[in-house]
Image (cartoon, rainbow, N blue to C red):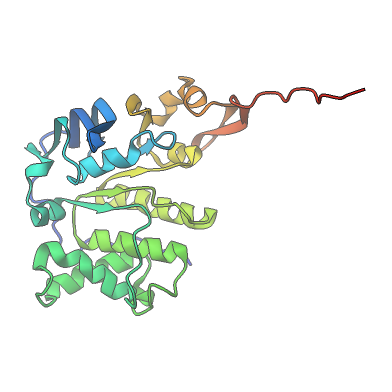
Length: 293
């Protein structure tokens, strides 16, 4: 299915009640993060670029999901601070914070017997509460979010009957219905086939470019990160190794060393450098077979 072109926001839409004075949407300052007194991320500082696509990459267990949870205000730093609009994230009231940022966790559970339209309506909780009836403004925001994600004609379909790509777009539409200016997504392309992965990433890129959303997401696929990131962050063992333009990362040799791979880069006009992996640095040559006489 071809996505509709992104239209301008309804007149009632306000993405953020406060305009940051600099180009930083969220800042993590010397944070240590972990669970049950076990640190996962240690002494890390990172700023999200406002109005850009910020992508986190790194091996499994490096701290990508933990960082996103801290940015969403769901995990309070053991040390350091996580700050949005000059205020530490853990001190925000949840409904107030939901008007500023939206967080989409990895592989969210599909609600039983819920249509796409009903799911997207849940994104209005931050503005109306759980039991209040939808207002005209709420309906406009829901219709706008469905239009941006190409799901208007799927509004009445059950979440159980649509494809993986359509389901993920429905969750993104739910986040958009919050009308928050920051969108955080933990591995939004997991379990999707290649075509649906690109569909989701192209949608996020277009939302950032046309609506000015600040987007931060984690990915496993290195080339997708190189293609879609305005700012790329590389993590390993809970440490920040690089944060900046993708073009500078490819000349550093860090991708090869962190992921223990061999390969080279191919520059494709309009898409930037792509990494062609040719082998693993971990694999050892097998020993000769032992033969008895």
